[in-house]
Length: 175
Image 1 (cartoon, rainbow, N blue to C red):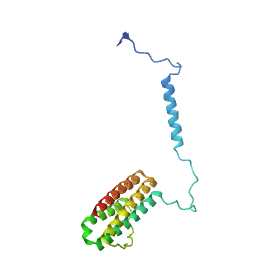
Image 2 (cartoon, helix red, strand yellow):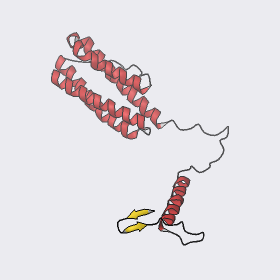
Image 3 (spheres, rainbow, N blue to C red):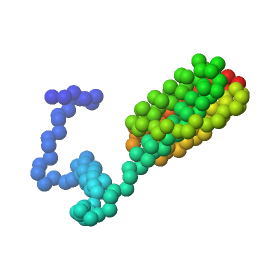
């Protein structure tokens, strides 16, 4: 026997079969029907069977994002290498940043194609070129993040963009 605020209470007996529909049953049934409709809407429609003479599938959008970012990283690595070669006194300040770009390329899982070494001028011009390149890279990585379909690639390109923004600030401090 249960005791309530106003005295003893007895538990309610289950309704007999064929009893009227309760709100709880109606809401539960509605949720089940809604979930079924959502599942059906998210199921791809059956398509034609692939044939031997069908066109090759379109390149994976994420593979294109990875390749573009890797190419950009290769350009940055080449620029760092050129600046270090032209201004060896900057090697201690720049080598770690260059190495981070190599790590970015490795994290993408795409080997960057070596880029042509750019021409660099004075120390001030070289640092300005690196700073500008890092700032451009932040914008490119942000666009790559938005273009990425896979969550892990979007996260990776966002992290690379943040790293490159840090590089730009560090380089600004060297001038």
